[in-house]
Image (tube, rainbow, N blue to C red; front, side, top):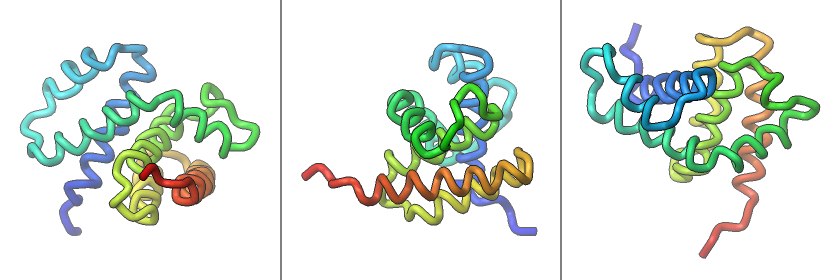
Length: 144
């Protein structure tokens, strides 16, 4: 089996940081401090990209949560599984914060991570919500 890609590892770590912040109701700086303790050596580029996704997800949290709720018909954020909610937050943060990364790549990565950490039913749900959000973001007029 090929080694896990740097970006995939970063995305998984960003998900775990968001999960910790969400469930622990911890301030961002506290999560940053405690999250990396005891993780051993993490390559700087892996840690850097994970931190970037986490920062965008936290800085734009109200906007991201609103997008997710608008596209997850009849689902409130607090009713979603914590893993699913935070995985979508990370993916939407990447869609918004890293427009050079192709939408399909971000969504496919989120699906692969969902297969690893979530339920089979969640995979389809996450795919549908992210695809819908991705289309809306792509259709939005770009600031000039």
